[in-house]
Amino acid sequence: MNRRNTDNLVEDLLGDFEYEVQVPYLLYRNAAQEVNGIWFYNAHDCEAAANLFGRILNAYSKVPQKPKASTKSEFEELEAVPTSAVVEGPLEPPPTSSAAAAVPDVSDDSFVNFFSGFGSRLGATMEDLVAEKHVKYILSVEKKKDDFESLVLEHLRMNGAYWGLTTLDLLHKLGAVDPDEVVSWMMECYHQDCGGFGGNIGHDPHLLYTLSAVQVLALFDRLDVLDIEKVSDYVAGLQNGDGSFSGDIWGETDTRFSYCAICCLSILHRLDKIDVEKAVNYIVSCKNLDGGFGSIPGGESHAGQIFCCVGALAITGSLHHVDRDLLGWWLCERQCKDGGLNGRPEKLTDVCYSWWVLSSLIMIDRVHWIDKDKLTRFILNCQDRENGGISDRPDNAVDVFHTYFGVAGLSLMEYPGLKSLDPAYALPVDVVNRIFFGKQRAPSLLAS
Ligand code: GRG
Image (cartoon, rainbow, N blue to C red; front, top):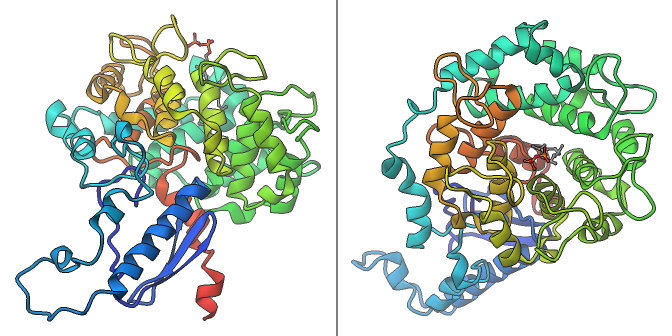
């Protein structure tokens, strides 16, 4: 059930089990009377999983109950359950994809080898990732306000906060910062008049910073400080007649802004404030013949824009617009001889594409088309092992942006000891689960 975790969620469907589909959620109550919801990016997958539940329950209802004391396994006992219902289950992608990462099936050997064998084949341990040094580096950048890096990040400080703090969370060290201090600084970047956030105190509001602000508040579980109607009105107000989004009042459109708006509104549970169908159609109009996406219709395919478009389509349950094999092929061709990934043909590799490319491949179930060991080595070779931080390429100067995307790429490859990141929301999976399941419960099942 988990997108990239080999620890499967196990539920006994054959006990006291009830389920209900409310696309994109599959809600169920188990024998312990716990109500849970499984959230799917794709409406089809949601219905297909429900269908599978139905087939299992239906088949089981036809099987006479066996005596408890049996030497046979529970699966052998379910002779009347057609095994093919599970093997050919609707969650399974075509044979070429071997179930890949998005919906792991631990019975699939290629999947098990791809992920769980990784630590031992590579000899990777937490020692290879100098995690403590990276934590120190991130904390030190925050303190040094006058050095080069801080100055060049001055206008992007809100994004910097998102990169740095998410890195700390992935490394289980978010507790090293004072949330009140962060939240109070962030609210100084908030524009009460319009509902948007600036990149720093006194800077103009923009969707790029508004998403980072919302993501950081979500990390700290402090979305309650927001005037959610005001912020979501600001975001929704930037949608144009053709479904695209401008980044701010000055009007430039870019699929990056479509992603920022959709991700932000989804986190705030306010997607209903925009015309989602038009937003999706606009993104689809930016799709190219090579399967990739650009920043505007006709714009060159670029891995960064592809993440934005695939992420927005994933969040809105519209991934059926993607030709997974064609795009997967284009994306996996981004891996170069040094193991790193570039953002488009003939360009240099850069650690940040570990995120843009891998997250996209995960969302379209083609991440196993990448040589994971080589990419892991590439990222680890970009670390400053003495002072912490990760650079774009080996031996270059480190910065917070590449430190985040390096650690994020490792997390997507399930590097030992790191928290899991959600490939669409670019937030740790536990944070995304809290947003969608923490306070929201299955209304009809709870009522019964
Ligand atoms: C929440 C993760 C997250 C993102 C928010 C801002 C945004 C949405 C996405 C940005 C996507 C994007 C366009 C990334 C590319 C960034 C990058 C390294 C651009 C460099 O472009 P070039 O042309 O580089 O200088 P190449 O590598 O093509 O030479």
